[in-house]
Image 1 (cartoon, rainbow, N blue to C red):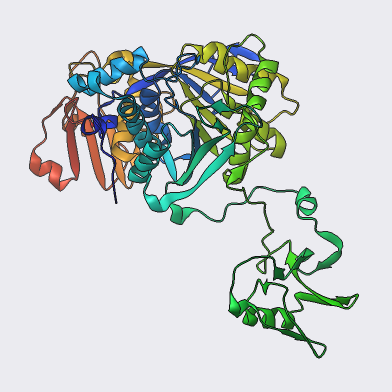
Image 2: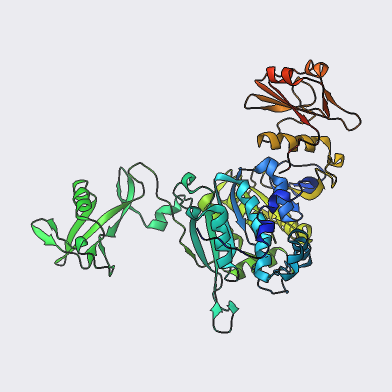
Length: 530
């Protein structure tokens, strides 16, 4: 498979592994219209900070759990007038590139810089997606080709479901020297296409109206409508031009039939064709049912061209909610809602790591209000307006929501906090022992830690948990040196096939540990960095 090469790629291709792991520091909770220091634990999160570090911080709780991602990254237009700086010459990006790419950073072209910024973020987004998870990425023609190639590299070409064309404007659009641009694109990828079933828009009773099913036409497969069997296609397919014999007459198609002769014979036997003669002319129609033979109801598919949803709608909707904002051209929530309706369940987790004004959270709230769902949103925004715009918008939407949804009218706001390890490679005790415990358990098991220091089972307080019949202990104390010895072992109560025990020192012999299935790991040397 062809791959894309650019200046600096070798420096960033595994950069996501070198990003320091920082903990999330809770700033406040917003619950039922009120803000407090108390954490709501609702699952709805807004994170202020560099989105690369924010994605890394989410891994212990969310790796392999995100059901759907929508991102609207910088388009790299070079337009310095955007509130969310749409140009990778932004000082924050320059600082990052210079520290990661090194001396080459000053010589990078705009496209190279953009690719250096996007690649490690896409790698972490891929890790966060569930096996049956899906990702949508909005982009325009500036980086379309480059993004297409790195998506194929990270997600795999077979996992590309579609490239959706979005007609973003009904009038002006972005003007080039020769054309008025009315379109953008949305890449649509699966993490694992084999885990994805057929995608159809969720539907209710309106599906009958949408498909114009008729109440007087109904049988054991539900309502049906009549569709012409003769196609107006200009394809010249001789095998689809044949007579259907009915009541002693041969009925020929005007162009050709849509079905093979064998399928028509079966349909006639099953009474799935309606053949009539009116005013001397035969009509042949087939019954299009609401339900499949297996009883699954028909859904509405999303067309590969989305029309009738325009950028202007996003701007006017945000202005109506926040007249004071200067944020221009946010994505319309209805655009994102349409995508989410196609792929999410009522309990899905949706992530947007380029949150901007918060359109994705707005779409999640709207969809929950529409179908009674309990979807959760996670937003990450690096700019200073994460509080005054992104979070403020969500507060106003929740306060004005016309329908109360369980756990849907609250969220928690976080800042990126301290790194787990200091520059010298030792544990940073400022993050707190519980966050260190969570980190260690995740590095061992890729699972979330179930126990905190306030709800430990009847065992030593260094017990982290049990996974795959292995018991994990993190024997650590800021004020003293901890030692794995026989006295410590006598305090352990959890029975397991194997024990992994972290401590500062170990006095047990190798023979004893092998015999009793004990693995010693030295703090901090043996704590995995990821």
